[in-house]
Amino acid sequence: MNPNPRHTRIVGTGSYLPARRLSNADLVRQLAAQGVETSDEWIVERTGIRARHFVDDGVNASDLAVHAARHALEAAGCRAEDVDLIIVATSTPDMVFPSTAAIVQRKLGVHGCPAFDVQAVCSGFVYALTVADAMIRTGSARSALVIGAEVFSRILDFNDRGTCVLFGDGAGAVLLRASDTPGILATDLHADGRHVDILCVPGTVSGGKVLGDPLLKMDGQAVFKLAVGVLESTARAVLEKAGRSTEQMDWLIPHQANIRIMQATARKLKLPLDKVIVTVDAHGNTSAASIPLALDVAVRDGRIRPGHCVMLQGVGGGFTWGSVLLDF
Ligand code: UT7
Image 1 (cartoon, rainbow, N blue to C red):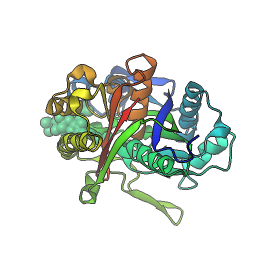
Image 2 (cartoon, rainbow, N blue to C red):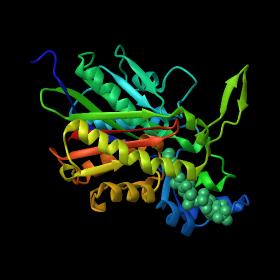
Image 3 (cartoon, rainbow, N blue to C red):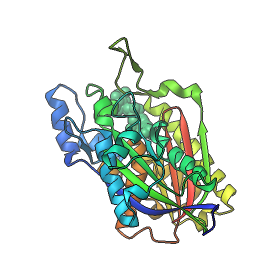
């Protein structure tokens, strides 16, 4: 076998949603009981979201991540002890430290391989995939578990109707393997720290106390406008790097935040809407978990098949954004 394979392939996908599902009607009722007014109609019209899943007390991001990772390992026919890199993309880690990836490693019953978290909010999965791809192509790892796992229900302000109806919990994972044939074709990552304030959880822990506000704040319109612009530019950039055209794409898997952002991106790229994988209706916005969750859904229902050209796109807090283009 070639000791320095030049490529990275996805060889297994997995995902996991906590059992507690809240339809818009369930959430509307719950919020009404505490004096917060919203409606199924508003949520569907403005976002495309119809339901989301929330964890029960005591369930953490690592628990969701481990389920998703096991499904990906099973799909690839790989044992956890044969994985030599674990990266978890999350903004809702189990603890301040150690990393959720280290906790996942322990729960998978293995030890020794490097394990660390990547924090790029809703772009976390494409960031983590890009790092793992680079480590595989340089020979630092031959197989890698890349996981997006979030429990955003823990950081939502249920008195802020502008944000609490948008997010959900879940996890998605891929198993990557070094290969002589191309899988990941090109990657494109960006951040613009000038926009730190438009999407943030402006709290921290200091001296045994929470300082600042530990709940999510978002200027939705500012995020919306930036997202629509950058998703088109990063799509074009990653296609150019890979020497591919939009016509050669079989599927677009955008970050699942708002159906209107996805529709706008598809329109700008002149991509038919039936080539866009949409799970925001069923999952809400699961931040770093949204892309691998959507990928796994579409692989398991048979839409994404071996050889298909797929673009993954993340966008979110930081402000961060990026794309990964791959042959599945
Ligand atoms: O994951 C990271 C990336 N995040 C995103 O991409 C999110 C991007 N932003 C968005 O998706 C949209 O901006 C939102 C869905 C967050 C908001 O949609 P919008 O069309 O920008 O609505 P808006 O914030 O301009 O609010 C319109 C109206 C306001 O009322 P007035 O001022 O027009 O009377 C809000 O108070 O809708 C009201 N509103 C609601 N009404 C019922 C806001 N939230 C709700 C709600 N139910 N839940």
